[in-house]
Image (cartoon, rainbow, N blue to C red; front, top):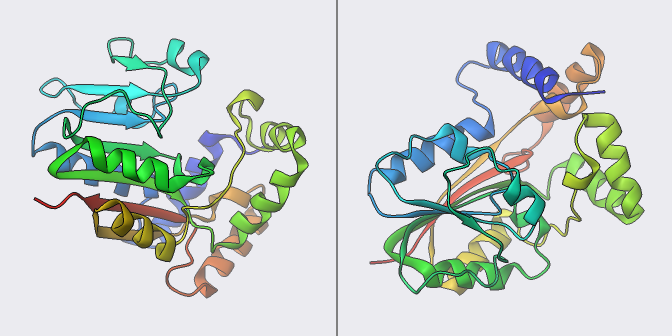
Amino acid sequence: MLSLERQNHWREIYRRDNPGWRPATEVYAEIVRLELFRGGPLLDVGCGRGGLIEQLDLQNYKAYGVDPDESSLREHRSMNFPRASALSERLPFSEGSLAVVVASWLLEHLSAPEMTWNEIARVLQPGGSFIFITPNARHPLTWLNRAAGQMGRWQGRLVSRLYARRESDTFPTAYRANTAQTLNFLARHAGLEMEKLVFVADPSYIAFSPLLFRVACTVDGLLADGRQIHLVGLARKPL
């Protein structure tokens, strides 16, 4: 079993061996913090039980969350964080009302991502930003996960057993917004400009043993640019 704590252990080893490397979640959080300096309300789409919001100092900002999973909303760890049950394709916010929209591990689950991108563009203020973190569909592990998705409910059981996660927290994946080419197209189609797209390696996902960790490091070292496992991006609505 590979718990999050164990994954983070291997990430620290990878950081030591690769000076300057940071986990995708750190890259993502830094971009969000920089955008918050612009002021204005923030929306976490697919907010789940916590995640990024728990890492941010939001005392001087308005922040909201939406998620279609009502049990996650009830169990959100930031109890003073206003949130509502809603789909990313139909956000309960008026046009141009938000300065920052963030999405953590959401895009890979969307069957019609263009609807979500159009809706996010609608609610953003001119100059506002959409910041996301998602898997890269061009990485070999993503290919394996896509194949596992054909197992239906058995995929959830497998992920729960391997990674010590709740089976109820494993959702179907579509990977229809998970390459640089597709993301750039979705941004342009929604009227946004892709300002930043960062590819981040992370060999911790198969680090069930020191040998497997080293194998993953070797594979990551052989991959061409643009095929690393994580994508972190920022798309901006023009002024």
